[in-house]
Image (tube, rainbow, N blue to C red; front, side, top):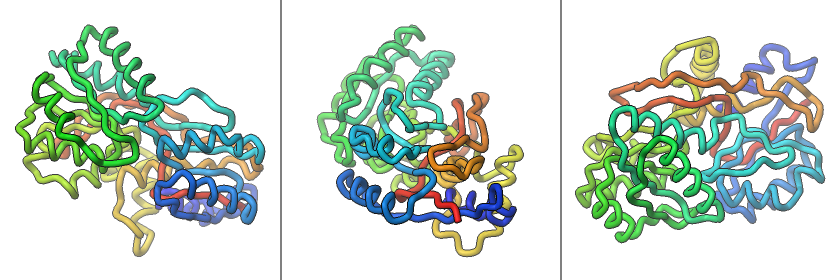
Length: 316
């Protein structure tokens, strides 16, 4: 929905170089095979300028491995994964990297005297790289990774053994690298089993989704990094622009959220040539801040990403 808001605003202002834009969407259900089929179909049928709003480790991995972007000379701009990815041709992340988030979370925890940490993360192909990055960060910050456990990538199933690992090791804080569904399932089970550590989730754990699943008691002690400006208050030109267009849009499909703000920022509207793009807003470092009582904090760079559906931006 954030992507559509950005296009609506651009079109109302006359478009770019006389071109207006439309959004073609298809829901892949989070299934890599369906994503590839839909992507190929829409590339052939609609000839979009850019792909935007993809998410999921396997989906991004298969898209890159297929070389489809290079074959079609089209960029993927703004995506969300729970792994640390190497750079790839025509794939542009305009949000803070997972490594950035891990570093900022650890930096903050060490600053307040929390040095015994746990890590909950997916067991996919990028698990080794993620764990190595976390160990590197903790070593550099003089912290210690005292417990780690994984969940099956692409699911929200949390085995009892995972929770037992953290209960037994008793870290002071657990860093949660998971989607909103998996993060919510872990937090719920950990708290029900008596876990008392502070919980710090990366931005991929959607606060709106988690708050719908968990009660107030389970949310206590939870903090989530954010990589966009707060969509709920006006703190600058971008947040005012977003707030104004959202307020002026009747019958929003979904409530305003951080994910919607990410989608809004993701849309590159400075070019109407296929394969050429630039972000409307450059990435920048946000100052560390807590936004209690909602238990959300921002400490990294912002400038883009997802939508709940696979999306294409078209010029007319």
